[in-house]
Length: 208
Ligand code: GRF
Image 1 (cartoon, rainbow, N blue to C red):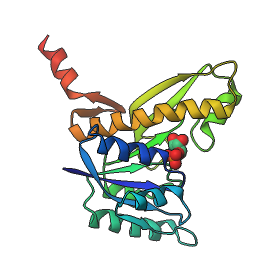
Image 2: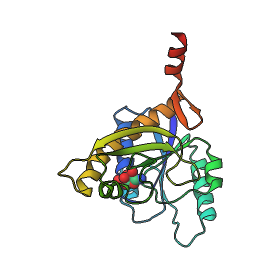
Image 3: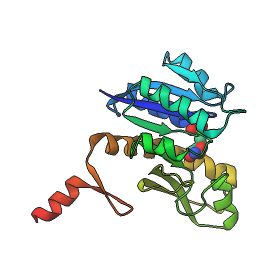
């Protein structure tokens, strides 16, 4: 059984959706550790309630490399195969990325490369886009930048404000993260330049 490590800083609804989809059999994996850098994160409370191995590693007052080293050690100890950032409000150091090559995923609430960074839904809304959505991508050392695994689009309605838009994007995030985790765990992908491609589709095309 593949093992997931979850990193979060806040509410934890993406983590909760992943945990739910594990228990209903939609993700063939188990969560071996949940780590929060903030003691007050609702997500870590939820992880405790679910009886999961939960750890707070505070980032406050620590230099990035030191904090990352502690998180890396905990993830290694928990034997994780894949790390899911789920509202983890920290940029990872290059050493962190190198420790888990192509084994760290992030979810972002916009159709990247549009609107990276904080408050992506608000940025998109205020820009006046007609379609936004969410992106699950591999993490590299740049913010919201690595190869895209799954995107789901969401129309922006005339009746929307940035909150209603964010709520509809969040519903799609919960679906997209499961799709991306399953693709990566299946190993049925290859990366060509920046493009994440399904090996089975490519093999099918070659056979035609
Ligand atoms: C989500 O919108 C996610 O895309 C972004 O941070 C938010 C986390 O929400 N990276 P939650 O903590 O998973 O509810």
